[in-house]
Length: 376
Image 1 (cartoon, rainbow, N blue to C red):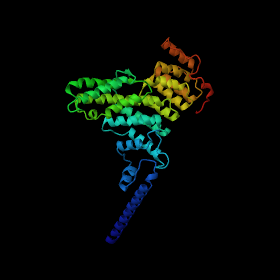
Image 2: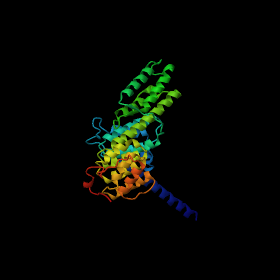
Image 3: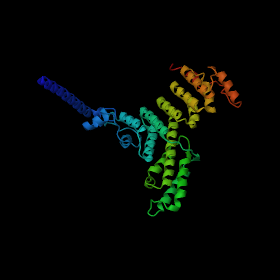
Image 4: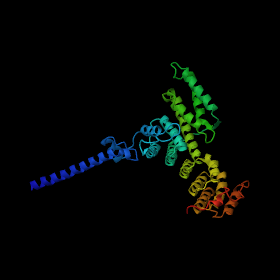
């Protein structure tokens, strides 16, 4: 009896050893083929393969950031052209997606990442990467606290003056880089003004520069005074969100339908009414019915007069799904269903506002009738 028990234990031990050996072989194989893996796996060691590939753990945000930043040619944003990793584009997309849900220890690191995404969404040669950047920007925007902003229009000159004043104040300290006590109040006011600046729509140069100012000045990064630190964090949060919004707005008119969809969806998710005019202008030339559907949902979410004016012609869209989305959007705005006929909704709009102007031409865009009804 005892001999049989020992025999079963030995066989069980052999099976466990065989399973462990098979797992070891699998890890080695994963490590060997990691260079041809489309996701982010270096697989240099069995530990890395187990940790990242098998368990699905994430690397640090800094590592994902470096991958995206270093894999593009600075002059034209082209990926390492000719040779190298054949799956570099796929790994970049994976890094962009992972950065969108990553946790950052400092706002400055988040600001650098949003600045990078702003470049990706406007310049990357991969439409999938631009789409991933739009989605990740939206996720980051949802997590940011929203502070009230007194928007001050600026063409960039006010920003430059404020930055020069803050630089001069810190340079006058003893030692330089330390803010003199007498200047704290004026510096805090200048930082707050930077947070409230509103740059020209779709021009991201100054929006990026305003973020770069905060993470590019060591004396601001290391500032420990509670009052100044609060002003820095609040202003930087405002600037990060402004760049997210501006980058999504810029992508509304991008060359790829899926990127336009994700950009409009992001603005809808963030409830950003600032892009209504851009979306309405895009509808005048938009030939993709899926983009028009997303635009209808966005206009229904923000519920502005200009949005209603754009939704009315969409009730006559050649695509049935777009017509349905337009009607749903109007129902959401009106709080009641006035049917599928455009004339009934025009009557509702005029009853709500006698000054409401209706497009008598019956079309948002000059070529709507010639597009055909692609899709369901």
